Length: 93
Image 1 (cartoon, one colour):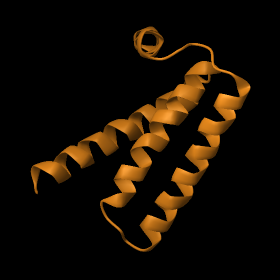
Image 2 (cartoon, rainbow, N blue to C red; image 1 turned 90 degrees about the vertical axis):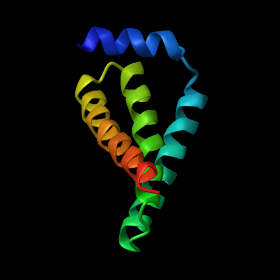
Image 3 (cartoon, rainbow, N blue to C red; image 1 turned 120 degrees about the vertical axis):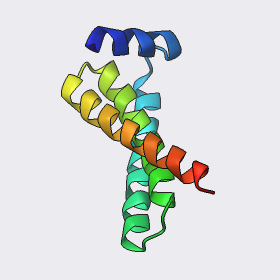
């Protein structure tokens, strides 16, 4: 299964990025994480899902770059949960 996910990412995203780009992605992720936490505290549903979805995507990508399988899989599980929640939200509009 890990090989399948890796080949999917290899197909869609570059396998090497500069340190500067990776740092920028991680800073964006930090901002998304902070905003998501604020959205949770103030109960700004569904903003929490919309902020957490790209957060997980970026962390999956950064974990894939550094071959950190545990981090990748944890965020992949959360990505599927957020995808389900976002889909359910749009179907109920």
